[in-house]
Image 1 (tube, one colour):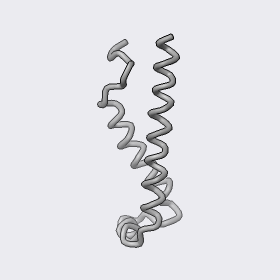
Image 2 (cartoon, helix red, strand yellow):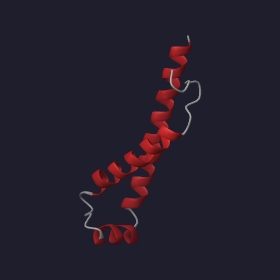
Image 3 (tube, helix red, strand yellow):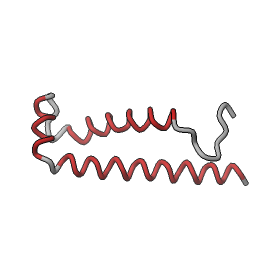
Image 4 (tube, helix red, strand yellow):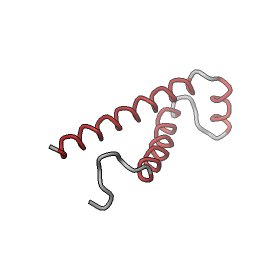
Amino acid sequence: NLGNVANAYQTSVSDTQEGVSNTLLSQLQNDSSIQQALANLGISEASAPTALGSIFGDVLGFASAFIPQKGVKENA
């Protein structure tokens, strides 16, 4: 039914967002110039995954709130 399709789509979107976040975090953690910039902002290597995860979560949450979800009616 349509509910199952919508749920499967949402799961796919969530998995994709998590994959993108993990890839970005991995690359950021291996880039010394970015680590230095983060250190200048008071974000240590130890706290970077949490801090960056929070930032990415906010960005992805904001984006998903404004990008229409395929198969999901607005104001349904």
